[in-house]
Image (tube, rainbow, N blue to C red; front, side):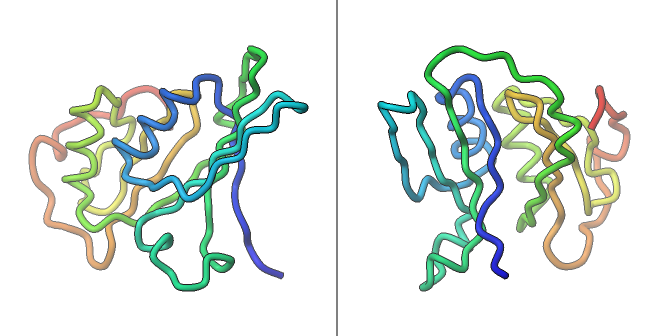
Length: 146
């Protein structure tokens, strides 16, 4: 058995690409438009994964955008995606500067949660040892659900 990808449906492809690529730091690795099915698939990977020499072994996130408008609910029912980051404070600062709410701040220097534009919960985990706790994160309260 081999893990291939996780698929999430998105209601606004451009907003989702801005979130996942520009703010979160994933890279688009391929895209497929299906005119007959009226949808677009965009496959994303974390930079460390997209650099692997064997693409088939790298985990990916598949964004599925249906061209006909739909309303998606239950993002919390999905659970969450998790990504390891080099500096959790820098990642949260970049996301917050881009208008993303930090639902569970990295008070412990190790873990944080944010949500995508479609309500998908995303866990960020510090690579290696936790960073020393620091402000403003230590004093920041949770916002919403994560």
